[in-house]
Image 1 (cartoon, rainbow, N blue to C red):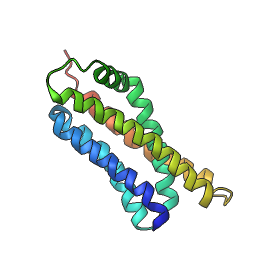
Image 2: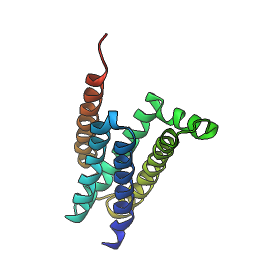
Image 3: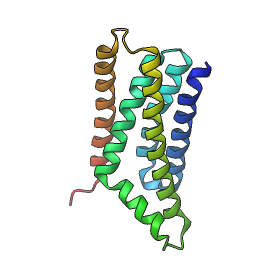
Image 4: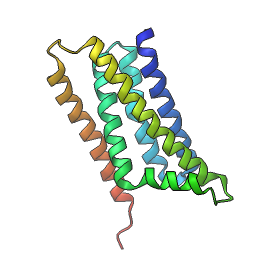
Length: 156
């Protein structure tokens, strides 16, 4: 269990950040709650010793989240918000800090999951199948998130 503790801690911290964002951005409550589901699943997989799936999904989900956050401008606006700190209200500053924290946690998740994968599963012949199934799960997960977010945008 000790070897999985770092990934479990990162997943728990990611959940905490998304739950904080559900509180701070009540308009996006369901989106942030949905974002945390995959990290709950990683914790469950680690608990049931399905490490190879947890590591691969942890890496792919983090890469996908970083890509989407970058393309949506979330990371850039968070950096601008924290660099300027012009707002008297604490909420935008906390949102920016939470966004950058989730980005840092995503990078750490990629590093730690990749390191565990290389130590424990590289060369066992399961990489391709695990990657493809995990990629399908992550694509379906983020596709649903994007569809849900797109439906929230008013047409008009």
